[in-house]
Amino acid sequence: MAMVTLGDIRAARERIAGKIGSTASVLSPSLSERLNVPVHLKLEHRQTTGSFKLRGASNAVASLSMGERARGVIAASTGNHGRALAYAAKLECMRAVICMSRLVPQNKLDEIRRLGAEVRIVGNSQDDAQQEVERLAADEGLIMLPPFDHPAIIAGQGTLGLEIIEQVPDAALVLVQLSGGGLASGVAAAIKGVSPGTKIIGVSMARGAAMKASLDAGRPVQVEELPTLADSLGGGIGLDNRLTFSMCRDLLDDVVLLDEDEIAAGIRHAYEQEREIVEGAGAVGIAALLAGQVKARGPVVVLLSGRNIDMDVHRKIVCGEIPSISERAA
Image 1 (cartoon, one colour):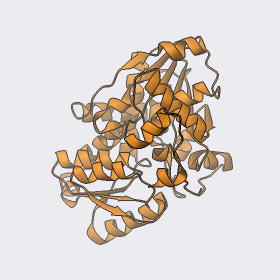
Image 2 (tube, rainbow, N blue to C red):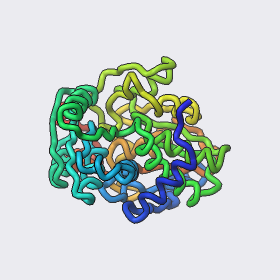
Image 3 (cartoon, rainbow, N blue to C red):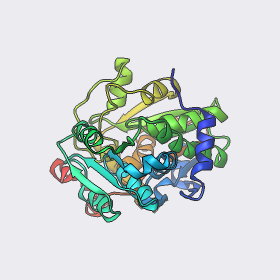
């Protein structure tokens, strides 16, 4: 089985040193009291570009040859990978093209454009955007750097796992966001490589959880992409998935899914109790604990993966409203 190794992740850490920030893990008094075990929050939403994605994008760009850098890079994205890749490419004075579907929130599109990347809006799903990526890569010679199923991307995201287990070495359980699996597989490979007894649970939304459906089916499958508060977790895993499906299958101890009310409760808790602004995907670990979806029996680490939420949507959520489907797709 193809797998990104602990050695690959450690090499990625050296490669991207100075290009990303090391983020803190802090104890949450409110969640610790509620669960009666220490609960630590890994504040990765404070990463440059507002999400963990900069780790993988920086490692992938740093791994390119000079000839490849001259050709430029292209990727499909639900927003955060595109922003991270645009940022990493700009630092190297490289061309970047980001293809996204109409489901990507406007605030994420604006940030990617601000960083100088070319933006293409194609179709209503990540799969539609990926088809445009493949066409442009063939026509213009751009280098494809996908958001998850790529060894350098996975290894870069895995550096987050190294930080987690160094900051909370007695962690019994780590809750990690699960979408295409680049983050979950990288974090799991890093943590299991250092602390095999630590359990890793992937957390996703109930609306269009492609990796969970694929794991249940025993093979990659297509799932309809639906609007959700956890928009960063949308998209398929690719029917030709090479790495993340098998790594998630072999390394994750469980997967839990959350409905929209539970995700909204996670966003509200992060703001009201932790004084942190996080997007829907960033809040799913907190949401899983609040909803009783996860049984905590030792020190827990909850990853806050991103903060790139539309602030009008955030305001409505913290005021007790759940935005309509049309607002989430706007």
